Image 1 (cartoon, one colour):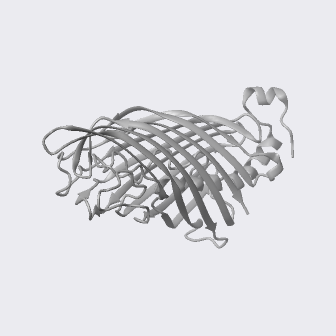
Image 2 (cartoon, helix red, strand yellow; image 1 turned 90 degrees about the vertical axis):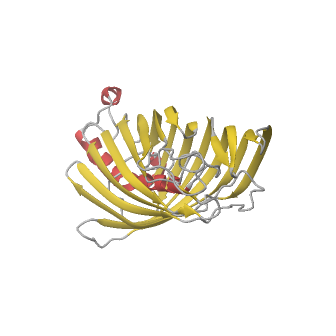
Image 3 (cartoon, rainbow, N blue to C red; image 1 turned 30 degrees about the vertical axis):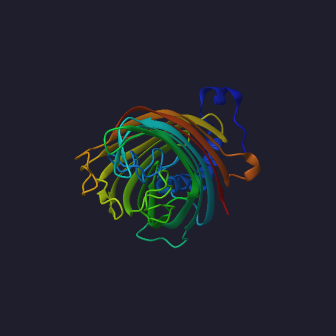
Length: 339
């Protein structure tokens, strides 16, 4: 491995030899971008608001933390993400009753597996995968009673959340540009109490279908990466609440600057907006639409002892604005291993 000269590291650029080494690491570390897909299957406890529960099957930062579109190497990849979200919302529907405010703490462990096939498909790399989340959610708030009285509540849950399946992911690259197109299907496999006895549910009790594209520009000479991943998510109706979350648009963006062959710092951000309002007889607060935006710092570490096959990623991404949605701080830590 070629070591960077201190003066180059200080400038955040790499030498030609180091650039070639970094390209090889990119092809291995690109699998870490797939680890972000696991986040698609997480869900805040299923209260109800615009995007039922003031959240949805999309969670900010779902696209990943590095090389969102760079083709991964052929073979099996395993990743694990620790996810923490703390947030609050002012008004929501909770089991058919109006809540005057909810505070949320959500801890999730998301394990994902993916396999990239060696034989090209449509001139690119074809990948399939799945992500399985479980975790702990704690809710506190107040409900309005049948006669308008205020009832304080507190509930928690430790359970499986909704599993995501990625049947189709295609990656292409040309020069410094890479492109990706994928479909994610989120199944209602998580814990959900249809009786209403439990207020904190890790499952959302409906299907989601997320179509996402991504573009990455990476300059190996300077060690600079910029990625963007817009997508549209369609949702089915929750049969137990008669509530259908509207169609959702989301975009994740990533910028990284490698300070050496093994370490990068950068920014993570997202923008989310419902394209159509919520519907169904359970949407008693009307045709709400939610919108939110957040940005924060992140890091990438590709340790030398892993030979470029192990990647550690982390971020802190606070919401700068949130309407009809949990206004939250998100902290994630991911480890990904390319076999």
